[in-house]
Amino acid sequence: MSSVIQPCAICGTSLAGARELIAVTKPDRFEQAVGVPAQDYRRVWVECPACGAATDVLPPESQRLLPQVESAYYAIDFKNSSIGEKFVKIMALDPARSDNAMRVERVLTFCRGWFAPGQGGPLRALDVGAGTGVFPARFLERSGANWTMTAVEPDPLAAEHLKSLKRFEVIEDVFPMQRDIGRFDLVTLNKVVEHFDRPVELLQAIVPVLAPQSALVYIEVPDKETTVSRATDDNILGALHRHLYDLKSLLALIEAAGLIGLQVERIVDPSGKLSVFCFATTPAALRQRNQAST
Ligand SMILES: [Zn+2]
Image (cartoon, rainbow, N blue to C red; front, top):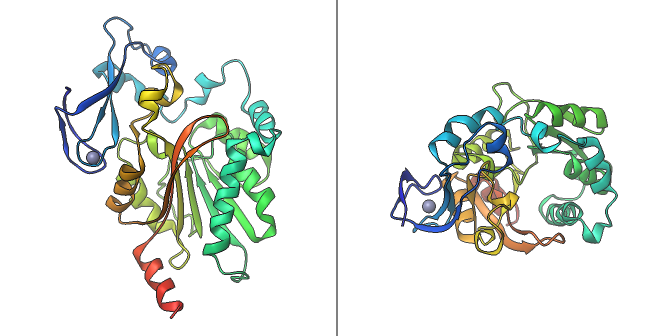
């Protein structure tokens, strides 16, 4: 039983007395980097009794110290290597063994059904939290000339790497940004949403950058099931992840943000990771599509 006072960030239900899924008793590498003490350390993942989402309940010291690395943690991840090297390594993987290659095919397959062929001019994609850039790069390689890509990345090291690729436009900023960046037919968030304290607000901020008629969103997050199937020091259970989702809670998040889920699925990635993904759209785009087909 937990003594959590914060409500569930996805559905607003009280987490007081919520079931503890797992307790982590050692600061992770990010917490260690910012000086969270190991003495008496305890961080728990609790399960929302209503929507089922898992919430990471940070100890006070982690709450206080972690914000300084949240938008710039690649300096900790890539202390002894470069992001460029990782990009080359992942891009060279056999597509059948690459989580990213499978993800690109999944998104492109859905897009072929969603976007009418020859829909006037290139389609615009926005990848929020592009990281190493393997998703936007492979997406462009596989989608042909019909797409343009813009990558948003707040981490200065990752953004510098993305710009050096010279494959797509890069916006070095935290999403959502203040300035107008235009509208996009597809917005992708790959392993990004779980980093946000307030995921509903994040997804609400996606709506104004969606092209009104096409408005497709792809969201992929780590699976809540990870809390029972992985070691407590697993990356997925790290302190920078605020929530983990299952099918029901990912759909609850989509709906809380005013979006409509089109497809929600659980997958086992080629690397063995468990993930949950969702394609979503806006009610207005779905309505227009329905009218157009009658
Ligand atoms: Zn909830």
